[in-house]
Image 1 (cartoon, rainbow, N blue to C red):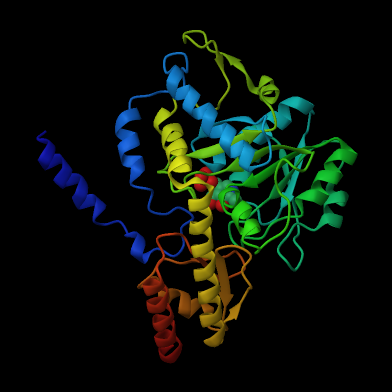
Image 2 (cartoon, protein in one colour; image 1 turned 60 degrees about the horizontal axis):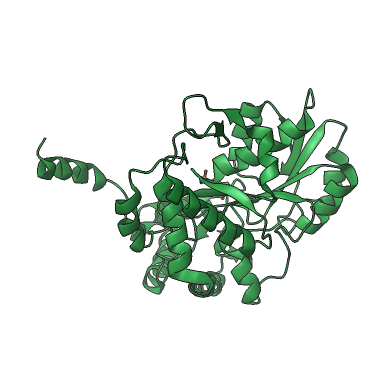
Length: 372
Ligand SMILES: Cc1ncc(COP(=O)(O)O)c(C=O)c1O
């Protein structure tokens, strides 16, 4: 087919998509333009066989080392994977194979991302969901009660998908040490946000490898690092952990396979390093600061309108109202927002969200409040 015609056809479909200026519910954003150039250079690379693409593999290793150092671990090893789901799966896959229990279970907060339900199903591990406290953090006393002789791991969440809350990972670390359990941290969203919120003084809790028991952390470059999808990250305390998920790859030049995917994108690794270098810690901190300021701005505006708004810990805002269902339906005619499992409206303030969008959103809410 003529390339111009086929592009026209594809664009016709694309026109049905929402554009980011209408999206207030996404944890991804418009990726950095620099990534387009990088993709052109690396679109043919396959890290499923790193011996064929040695240079690209070095790029992945450097990206992981830098992310590891941001997470306070200079010995970190890991991979750029397809997303948070694969990264979380990898962490629990390692844990399951270390402990080799007949009927293993793992413990996580009831606010965990749905990827953990899939993982429990795939790995045949029982998932034990623990209630949260009034701060939306896993209830530590309950965690102790859920542990038994078949428990292999605890998952701490650093930035829950719905509320942006952060579990007390330090306490979870102590519990894991006492009970010889694997500690995985799901910082898919928080990984590239919390370190900077901490530097900016919004937040002061530990969630990374500084905590001795933490064995693996999920961080997603395709969220706040502004890398095109797919780019997740599984960061391990050390390379040795991979022995638990190493399989023979007979027909490849590299004889070991250590990721869930076989064939996998080298471009995602290259774009991740490109974003890290392009933005640097300084650039990312500025982006996070900007998102947090906008979140607090919207928080004040919504309070003034009489909504019941949860004080944001991160760039996620959750609010409710006695006519929430009608307001939600009304908002969806103009903006994409989502609902929490507790029937509150949830807004995520990512870098594509401008003050103009927020002001228009607030005006629209005023209109809805008057007309509902
Ligand atoms: C905390 C958390 N964990 C895991 C995931 C899953 O990530 P992905 O959609 O990249 O698979 C998400 C996605 O939003 C998330 O917020």
